[in-house]
Image: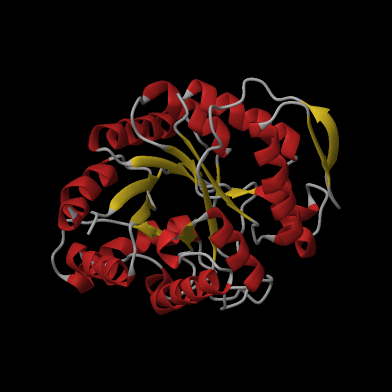
Length: 331
């Protein structure tokens, strides 16, 4: 069996409790450099606005951060995990991606999703009810723009004629699609099941990044449903890649209960107080390293081959702990 591959959500938090500054930028840079040192792919989160129903902060603009990461790395992949497509225009996005591919020697990984936070759609001129179809149209349009000159497209939401993006990458970046069951927020539209339209999108792309805002059992249930859906569509389910993203806080404390207690403040700062700490423990990787590794192993046993872990602080030492305490268990 192939070993588990690792990425890290770089802690590009737009902290709400203190202004950003030079130390925050240094921490981001050091985290990126440590990822390069340890062979951990660099992933970045995309949230245009702070979403108080689920998170306590927003994040820095992802493609700008990856351009910065491209300048200080040479080997690791650079990925959006995930890019909320419906808040963007496909022609502008294609130009941004083509530039990032050019500047990174084609190390960009196109992680995408439809998003879930209503206000982000409202302020960018769309509606959350349109997010699925807009996502599919943007994927089609961006793929066309990045692979062909003089591209034309006509959809319900986006249309253009005879557009050439230069420079185009040598090939279309690998695409990862996010989605899956999520513990619902009463003020939002997500549900604790994986929708058929989402499964269609994932099977077509071939790479799934499962969500961390549901229960572990739901992630495994979604994976089984995706494999069954691939078979219904005439696709080989063995060709699907099972990836997972999750938030984490690593401490040098063997006792699980003490580790949970030490992790509370960092998690609450990053996630806010809308959800209880017990709820956060159900969704995210909280506790002793042994317990966290056991949780990851449970997903590996179900078929997981790629995991993205996101520290809930911007302390670069979290990347070292990931390389020292977690990665060796899955080699």
